[in-house]
Length: 203
Image (cartoon, rainbow, N blue to C red; front, side):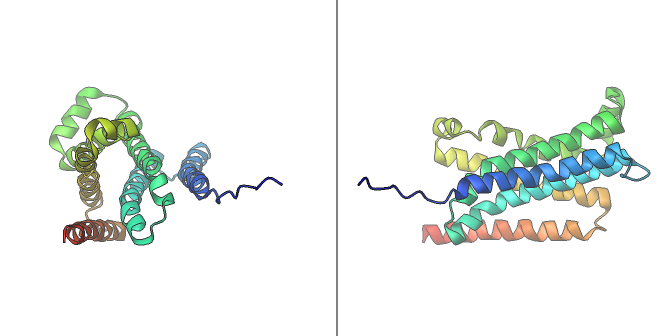
């Protein structure tokens, strides 16, 4: 009788499917709300803010995967890290496109003037641009070309991008929303964990 091979439960596949479903759900809701005029009196602004907040939440969640893996050892956290990071970049890119296309109607002279005058736009744009090198080097081949050490240092730009995103959020909403404070606390906790874990690893 041939020995039957025991198959491990496909946690990685289920985790990726869960991330996909979670990422697509707000987009489908926003598309439905836009089509049915359920985004309020200023739908472009509502859409813009929803995409920006979701992009920031996805970015913070992506940064939290490293500590989650260190605390639990569950490899599924690392299996979805690239996927979640790309979703964060997707939401934030859509956030920018909505501002360029729906809010500013692609009037580039006005867009450039607005960015030059307004701090929150400068901070938001720089925070998004910081993610571009991370997206371009998110494949395994890039890690091999850069080397693990350089790759890890480069991907710490995610923390700077998140900090800039929270600052952008605070400037837009003048710090009135509790999400700004909660996001800042979460980011400080993640940075504190990273620093503490690094010190423990060296000792």
